Image (cartoon, rainbow, N blue to C red; front, side, top):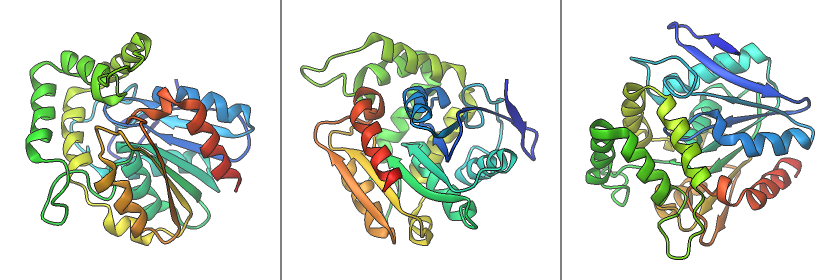
Length: 275
């Protein structure tokens, strides 16, 4: 198993294969790098070197009693990319992973390390409601997530995957039990304390300054029926803060569109990378 030990002793798991320009995938909460399996197989077949890590306290990385915040997530990833010697990389992040991408690129992406970035259903500039983001996700909703994780995270995770994450709660949705089970498998592999503290990281972190500081091209992709990260207060705002950003939206697509509509998403990411 490939792991690297970061400065505080936490072991970060990563997997990689292929050759060529590197593509680094950043997963959403509370999942693991396995959530990108479809994309990793596709882009490796297109001639790219693909890498996915498990965020601290998630998946196969070691449990983390501290450091469950965006600055530490980005620092962990910087340690991994230095270890692998990555240059001219494409960084792709979904949901919480999109915030991780933005913080990483802003703090560590200079000097030829990062060529481009892609965000899917991502949380920047800020997911949660605040004085500067009055239309963000209300505190009561976020507290409900916390309560669900604390009370019975197994049931909460099953309901979340079977409901809003993939839009399986919509009338006429084609529900995949395998997709639900795979989401649950990844989520339950992680550490409850890290996942619980990560809720604050993905709801309260403000990425405004990070977005404004990035020079590299950034493609933002967002489903218009995203029930987890509402597009109006996330991606539609984020694109206005970037120097070189573009936004592509998808009518009817859910938060987990990289899984439910992988053929469309993969093709659009490939076109952006090659442009």
